[in-house]
Image (tube, rainbow, N blue to C red; front, side):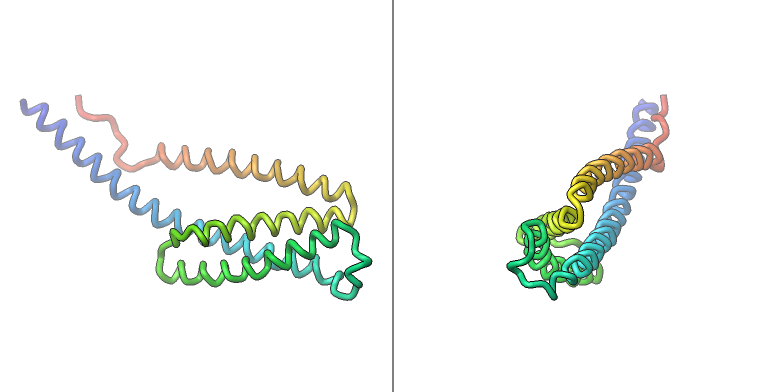
Length: 167
């Protein structure tokens, strides 16, 4: 009977340690997500400004299809990305992320439009460069995913208080 009580106490300590670990991890995860989002948003804004700038002096009728796609994609993405940067500052201040569906859709649309603008801009420069950015993005996502999964798996294994229960 004493052995069952000892096991129960051990499991309660384990459960409490897990709850604490998950609370800390969740808060840290949200902060890191906000930092990474700001990096992506700011980078796409900068890329968009650089890519669109040469087209400001050209007449719209003289632009080829890829240049027009680049300009249109960034004309939609830059305001969305800017609004998301400002929202991220507010989320960072409040230390929590919004759960708004409108914001989630805006995030995906802004990132998608930014990506389309980058691909179209490189495609305008040289077709092979557009293809290269498509392939590079696929490889980059694969590398990021593999690394992310490994880091998360290693972190989960390093959970404090993960020793075996008493026999």
